[in-house]
Length: 181
Image (cartoon, rainbow, N blue to C red; front, side, top):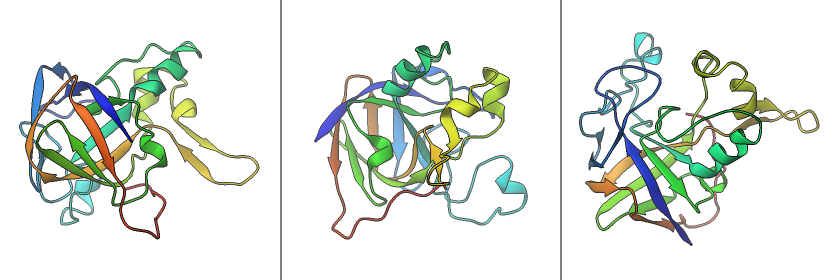
């Protein structure tokens, strides 16, 4: 099973959105070269203040382009990089992947999926009401639904461009559902 990369983004500074680029370079154990979230320890601006030595399980943020189409039907104009993701994909059920899944991007790069992105309230600053569309409490199960992509660490570095393939390699069973990281 596989899909494709539709856009790549990075930002040298903290900010909500990340400008799209012709390519990004993934560095093993670090993340996206030149991106503010690259590093071996947590780079999330808020979490660094109280957990600075935690391993960085959020080196690369991936989001499915299909979410943009779903949000457009509800009146939200969102495109690649605008929600802070580094890699935008199509044709891959990112949210349905188990923890530990390997994603082969292009010819070289390999990411390991670590968990779900926990959306923050800044999403409402970007587009009022958007948080409720990417984060919701299921009234029946009482479980939270996170739709704002997945986080990963770089296992093998390489250059990634829009148009590159995404090949999915599931971990051996038993599979563990993704949790927020």
